[in-house]
Length: 132
Image (cartoon, rainbow, N blue to C red; front, side, top):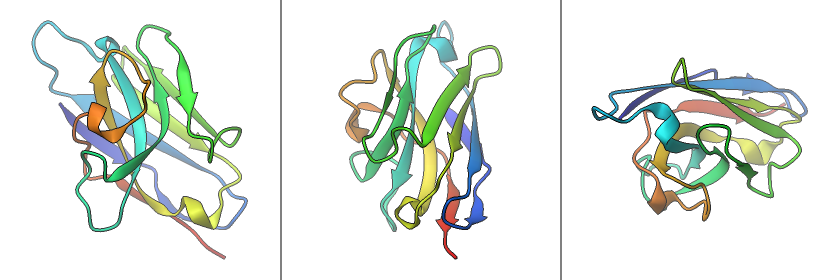
């Protein structure tokens, strides 16, 4: 599965950004709705895969549950569109500690536990920088 993330940029503390991710290349017989999809923020210098990343939000397919990391709960909102194979992360009230490269990835079935090793590799990501 391939991903193209967009929407990052430079924003002041307290500001907001909207990240988008488009997924493609699903194995025949499987669709975007068969997977949980998560947004991750990446450890600098590491690949967008495995446990070298922090899951910040995850949404299960077909209207399933949504989960957030405690550090972003109440500030970030994830939504997905199965018809368009897209997932959006609305980020509000951004803080300097939210600065990172963000990418999306899919995992089989459930979001929980929200661990990087349970999801596949992400795309190139989009950089979010929160600074005054």
